Image 1 (cartoon, helix red, strand yellow):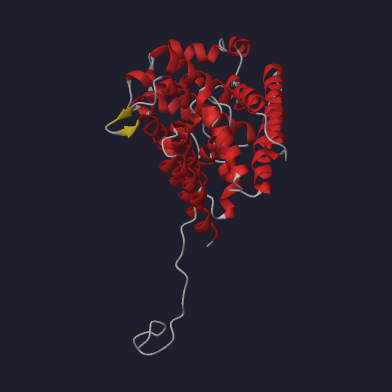
Image 2 (tube, rainbow, N blue to C red; image 1 turned 45 degrees about the vertical axis):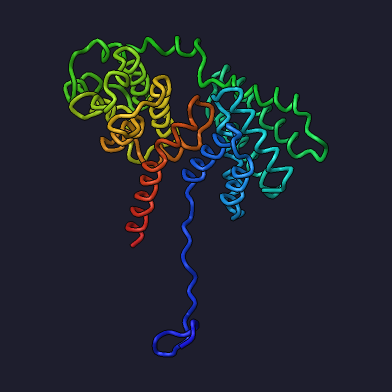
Length: 340
């Protein structure tokens, strides 16, 4: 029989092999690997070939470009320069469609604008507007038909280094919440600790929970002294954090609080240089505890991935991408079973 026929002489159906679809987390992880290679400049030709392989399927181009922009936040000047040079090279060599450059930058701008709409704090409003102007200016330079002025482009890109998530003034305004002080001064743990905040209103629970978590990590150096994150277990501090922060179907404000809690962990482990415990990412272990003990929902991880402006985000996403992808798959499986 021929290659086009089966054992019984019937024509083969010629079913196409199912190709694996990359998740947003996997694309972002690829971006980080490629940017590191491009930054080292050891084999730029190989790096560009990897770019072409990753975004050969046009549906990944927008996410890749968005990932390259977001990767700049909080990184060193040299790394930002590498990311921007790569985007310039991609534009020059037509490695991505011009419209996809526009869509990638527009996606980042939309994210910043969402932050503008959600946060009324004057200092954050001012910073978000500045960030929006920077990203818009970078796109205008990249989309220009004329030669990009490297000096101007570099200066514009460098301003991304100045992004901060909150001001010192705002921290001072919130650092003396009475319930937080009560929790910090107590030696209780588990359910006994939770009893101290049962009267906190639904409207204030998330704010109290996130600030308490931040202050707890800072005052007792939880992440440094407990890399396995056993402090998040229910019989330690997990119970009170779940009571204050968790909501199974969070509204926008509650979901943002859960994302803020993940950012608190990211910031703490970033300051420690993203350590490993038992050859595994300590940050990923902490994220798993947050999910296991019902402190954050799976949607919070998805929002955390796409949120920009936090130092060390690129490395944090790379270290936790497998776990975050798993939470999204589980969420998808749950939705399928609900439909059935």
